[in-house]
Amino acid sequence: MLLTVENVSKTYGTVEAMRDMSLEVDEGEFVSIVGPSGCGKSTLMEIVGGLIAPTSGTITVGDTPVNGTDPDIGIVFQQESAFPWRTVTENVAFGLEMTGVGKEERLTRARDMIELVGLKGFEERYPTELSGGMRQRVAIARTLVMKPKIILMDEPFGALDEQTRLILGEELSRIREATNATVLFITHSFDEALLLSDRIVVMTARPGTVKKIVENPLPRPRDSTIVSDPEFGRLSGELWESLREESMRAMAGER
Figure 1 (cartoon, rainbow, N blue to C red):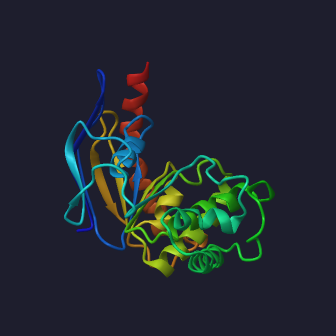
Figure 2 (cartoon, rainbow, N blue to C red):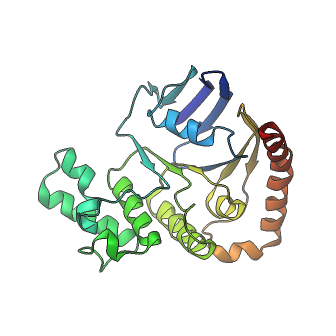
């Protein structure tokens, strides 16, 4: 197993954000996490990424415990992350530059990745010259070019409109097929989760833990036309049925 989350709990002062969260992700899997607001989805992502420590429990990549940030784990956040003073190529090559990769190699790898994410022709543009969706492609390329074992994505398309999200979901699905990347993905969108995922983890209301794991039998490769498939509708209903009670519990707890 590539990633193992075992009995992870996290408490902030008197607030128990997560309790006994356990999950396994195999190499090449795309696993999405959905859950009500405040259930600890982003907290889990930060713990797996080594950005914060769990109160208890362990995270391992292969046989290696996660203790702090690790180059084998790449992270794509929702918020804007491109350096505005760097071109697309310079942004994508940034991590390679920081790790001492020679100029010729890093530029070659960056340009190859830029082409893979569909930004060929924009290599010398600056982030202010790109749309929000294109800037997120830059962030994805900058992560992929480092060849991490695991990619964490915390609602990377959350700030975009629904149409752009679906199109970028298609692109991410294509990129994932091309790279066989292992991805742990947080989303509030069932459509996004079903388009992209092999499995979908439904979390409970706070303190968050696994309520249900839904296997996704929809055939690959997938694109946004899959939303019209009756099985897609059935799976979406199954996810909502599982999540609805937890969302109501979360709302009740906020009153």
